[in-house]
Length: 455
Image 1 (tube, one colour):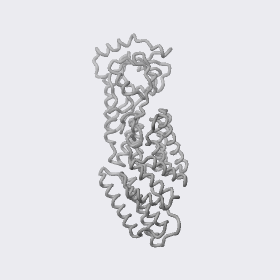
Image 2 (cartoon, helix red, strand yellow):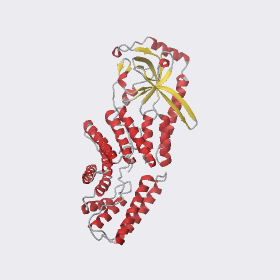
Image 3 (cartoon, helix red, strand yellow):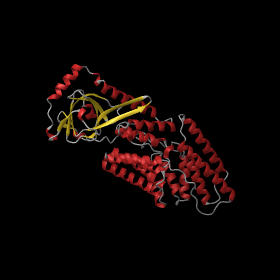
Image 4 (cartoon, helix red, strand yellow):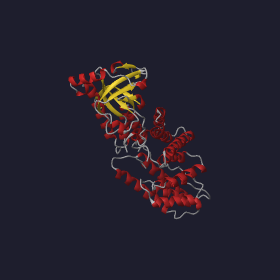
């Protein structure tokens, strides 16, 4: 199941990740009690092997033609059901539990809820209530029909029976999907989501999927709760561990990481990840993302080089308007500085005075960016994080903006025959920005979505 890493860059949540809340079937289906006879055991083993093959396709086969994958899944589901038909109801409770589990998990391999799958998995839980695998399967199935509370109970029951990473992975995803009545409850859920993902990693530090889930959890924590840069870095570190441990077959890993890097304006690495995601899954909207990035980078570089395509007379007028601007009282004793005098990185104790020339943000993707000019007639762009659309829309042409403690960063982009680079101003704390003398307020965009993170 691919939940929406929340509508791609609908706002800052456009940076939340994509996950498939689908516990992978264990090699052993739930079974207790007397052993079946040899022939029946062989049929069950064949069905288990087919179930593993089914989920291998479910998790790792991608095609631009969605019907192709559905047909492959349907064919295997039919094979599994036909195999199990030869066993009837099963000779004993252990066999009946195994049959119910395998039938249910097979029917649950599609994106939409299947009542037959739920019936079989419910039967598996009743026949073998001590099977964590059956509880996990049941939780995944009823999650699809929107029963989040029931799904949570199932995953928690599976975890009570046996510490296992599948229950923890599912709980981490579900906790970020549960609607919250207020900000406090949302923060509690997401922090708990991170904790569950950490526990899953602790159970098996070599498991690539657990690291991927942890990366998504940290993205949720950053975009919806803390907005601490350290949490976003932890997300990228977790994605790197997932990649290194073998999750290189997961296109969502690269797509999500591409979104995070795009948010950080590391466009070169973002596009590298989008390209890998597209190679693995042609159905992902990576082409649009790459086109948007390249359009933005090309446009910004050209506008800076051509001085906003402005005539000399207008530039001279704007320079004159900035010559007599004094520092806002609230900033204290900061040294005025021009764009050409900035050092790379932090410029603490300095104050930049600028005019907004035009908005540049591509497709509503955060951060909000603008072409600016200083009193010396130098051009650059300023990227503002954590401001609302309302505040952004107020930054119209000729707006006076003063930036305390400016940070200068650089974009270097070399893909598809393009080789461009430019410096820009990065503002992660809007309270350092003064618009017509008044400091901006931090306004976290908690609605940000990241196509492919969470439902």
